[in-house]
Length: 243
Image 1 (cartoon, rainbow, N blue to C red):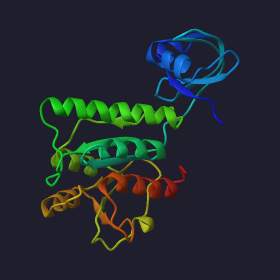
Image 2: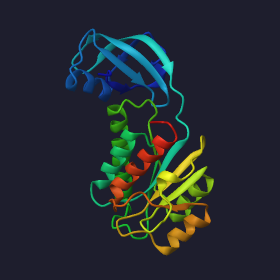
Image 3: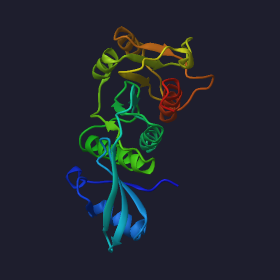
Image 4: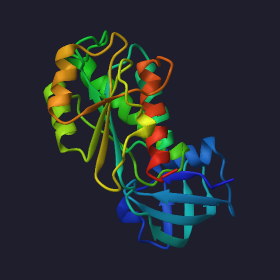
């Protein structure tokens, strides 16, 4: 079993003896109950990985000895999912599973037919939950590159993502071209647009196609918006050799 991963201040990762305290140290010492001699990995969330051994444990912190360091290259090509806001806690489910499979950027998209709308105080709280979910899922899945959860985007901003992509696909149940058969690039961003439960509007499809997006069929069944992104990402990650 791979050692647990915790996130640490980048400034601490250069030391041979590292104090892991704060929320991460509390979780490691009090929840995971790690003890002297056990292995722990630390990361800054931006590709740096420090392999450590626990020297000693206190009630809410660990003293670690660094035994090896390495830098993990940023994955290429990047998988970017423009995710229409799901209902209830399905948004966090989508973020969690997409993070676990390896999605690099998640763009919360306020599509026209989204039941959920992030307004006022709710916007900040919902975005914080998505980002917190991504952080915890990245640690659980031992990712040393944290996924980026961007600020919420409207259709115009999402279309800009599509226009800048090396490849952009629009998941649509009436598309004829299968996602599994599309040509994929070796570098750049692959953008996947996932619509809401109520489906994409004609104007949204037109905006994304004008920006260079291609409608594709994910499979023979209709998935929820909270699961379509992770399924599409899995197909693409396999196609580009990251899986």
